[in-house]
Length: 116
Length: 501
Image 1 (cartoon, rainbow over the protein chains, first blue to last red):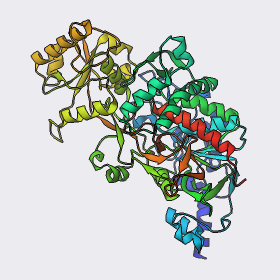
Image 2: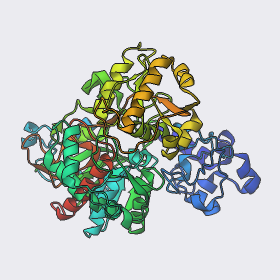
Image 3: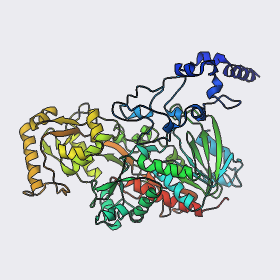
Image 4: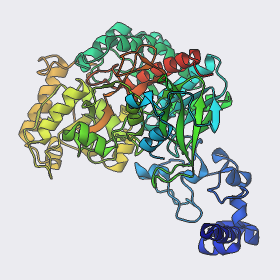
């Protein structure tokens, strides 16, 4: 019973704008979308709240190879690495509610200044 | 669900109790959440090769599982060198070679701990790997190099000097032909039937390797058994310190996901373990970069065309082109002359001519792991060496190059590049690189049971998780080929196997 109530509260939180207030949306998304940018823009699955698949990203942005990226000072392009090319999910490197982190920085000095 | 919990949950009450790893005396009670023709665990060299051959053999509903967010494991972050005798490229370049010659090199490096039958299968089918890669759109440089311990130039280099240049085209080819790839999925158990055959896997879906959290647990049935293509476990500190305590503190070259879950699952269903205390060290490791990075690629060229010295003596200490084990052991002896906090790192260096031809040089020089010095005096000063002794070592090597004196270490010289300033140099420190041990397989990539020394039905494996091809140590450019030859074989054998359809 207790669990049921907690689940109901959680569902309410997750489905409302209250959640967005605690989980910030990045400025470039607000700039581009204004008040059209809600949790549901990315979290498209019905029912249980889930990590979004990158279909939501791709609907607006296209795939890795469609998105223009600037090479860094070593002439490396983040969307065309020797190891993964354009096979990666957006969320491997990009996060919305926390700072993004390039997967390549685990081994390499990359300094992609425009990472969003 | 924990491994043990799962096993007890599904374990039958009677006869099965005497067989510690069997799960049921009748039909399993679990119902399957999903069903496939073939499930392959791991998306690196072995996994994609298995998917390719299974697809070519006519299987339709193939699923490749990957534990991590990214695809391809260590394969895609490797240099992608591939030693393939009798490939179309090697023939075109007119290089004389044979599978027998490669086997001879492998047995020498493996100190005869190899399974010679597996070594011969790898060497003799290597050329088919070249054809498969070209079929999938991979591209190679138009040159071959002779890596350490090889007696012929047979190392093919991907055009982008990365294993990604081989695995990614295969991954895309497979996607285009309907093979499914699912990442963030950890296999927690191999599911074993009462006849001890393997029928499927228990998985954790939407698994986050960093937090170990997951969303769901499911069971997947695989009609043609399971191909295990999960590679090694050198990032599993506890497993390393238990099997080879001496290597506990070494740096590693593997990606963080190279841990021991699947080798433990294989042991849990009764697979025969081999050589678990044997690990390979990479002699081209550099303490000034992470993993086996670009400096390692440069080191290969410096080893081939130049020398390595002990900074304490200013003198050479090993045939720089011998097997990885020979070189690593010699380097560790040099390092031990220093303290644990401040090891006496050996140095390798080359002339500009050599450096500028080496893949990885630009990046290594840029990142500072390879340094430039303009004279012997500067080079000696950089590493605190005796300039007179170093000058003598360089002069001696140049005499060897001219053919005026024999090489004191018996090194075979391919390219005679005068060693002169400016010098490009790096520090050396062997890194834990590869698991020589693993479970036993036979020539059909069937996993062998410890109980019967016969195949476990429905269980196939190849690549680093399987042992035997290389013995005690392996040559460079041989893991990729081992993975792809036995991956292909595993896919073909699985396609023929159909116990629980």
